[in-house]
Length: 389
Image (cartoon, rainbow, N blue to C red):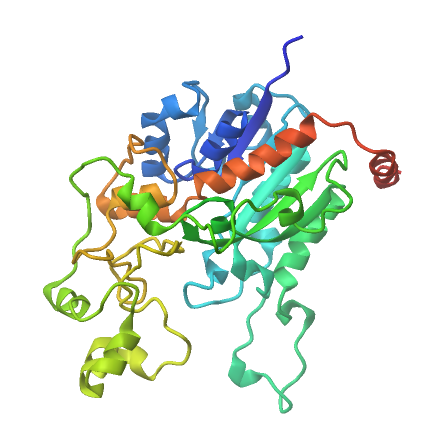
């Protein structure tokens, strides 16, 4: 008998990195929802990589109902195998100035939860920044904390935002595991840590799995990580599409050897030059690892930011005096070389930087595909019955 397709509803799809990985694992995309016009155009240009299917790509999730999305997918409640996506949460990204999230129930997250409630997919995968682990619903400045100030309210406690999100999934009666995964542990040439939340409607997740790493077992370790050099050296000959450094910034990068950053100027040049290079960041606290960073071919790339040219997020090519190119960005995120990105160069960097690495999506998809072929254990069936009692 022919196996029923493993269907995917994709929300907050971006340029489709997560979905492309899930497709490679055997899932069949039925609908995408993405507000960014360039990202939608990117998916349209690359339908051959998504099985060549003519699935709908809806735009603003706030302007369509869950039933609209189900109808576009051609699915009824309970028929979708997987719902996946990453509600935007830049407000608590560790890459920028961290602020409070605000109540998740009033943010775009609620549309993700509402879609789970309406579609009742067999599984869901929610991907997000690691900052969500410790994000508070309401931010209290450090100057207003301590013995001389009132204790933190529950909504000001670190992790209060994630607690609300997990409570929402529990209310939907899903079995849930969550935790950080490092993309480099799945053959991605990038040490990108992301929070992954996996839910199962029918309590099919192994009871021994406490975090996604227990289900999606790592395949690589520090001794065999795929490196930046592996990724960019495998590209066929091409004309790099790249942003450019200003002359002043290029002069600074001339002073920084492969694998080093602003600290090389601190250690080998004058303090006056360092102050000029760092600007206001000279007096800042923190590691400032991303400032004026020239990459190494012999290590995985760091997390790709949405722009490689800012002094705080610079990703200079290991040996050339330029940022990583769009093609190199795409190779690090494991998009196919012939994957065509729409929009301006800045938009292309943003789409790629925001994407889930394809290999990570594929690893998650492979783990879920295996679950779809197994029978739940008696213990899992008992938990399912208890959840529905």
